[in-house]
Each structure stands twice: as structure tokens, then as C-alpha cells.
Length: 105
Image (cartoon, rainbow, N blue to C red; front, side):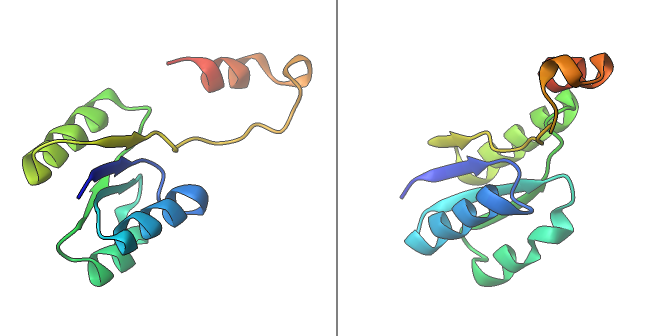
């Protein structure tokens, strides 16, 4: 059994991947800025799903989530850094502040 840490699980790819991983029988740290959106995972997979709040733009949030995941499962085998957002403009058409925010660590 592997332990997965998946960011951005409230919708889309992150949510689908978390579901597939848990259905396969692996453990998963399922994260989102709003963990209320993840309740179905704890209901369906109470032993193998660990729901955590995580904002990947906040260093403190990252450190807290990583520590909690390690404490619960003892380590992480697979990291899926899925959290993010799209920006629907060409670089040359975008607002400079928005482009900087998109690419800054």
C-alpha cells in the first residue's frame, strides 16, 4: 500500500485522482483550501483518507499539512502537486501583477 499526498482535491483532476487512489486501496492525504468540500472521502474511506486544509501559497499551511500527514501515515510515497489555477491570457496580454503572482514561488 502506498501513501499519496494530493493537492487541489476539491474539483477536477485532483478529486478524480484521490478517488481512484482510494478505490485502489492506497492511503491518501486529500487536501484543499476548503476541506468541507472533501467530506465524501472521509465518509467512503474513513481509514485510508486523511482530509487536510492546504493553501499551497502559504508556507505555514504547507508545513502544517506535511507534518500532519507524516504523523498520520508515517511518510509519503507519492506527491501530486495538482493545486493551481489557469490564466486565460497570452503572457503579453496579461496584467503584470497577475503574471508575477502566477509564476512566483
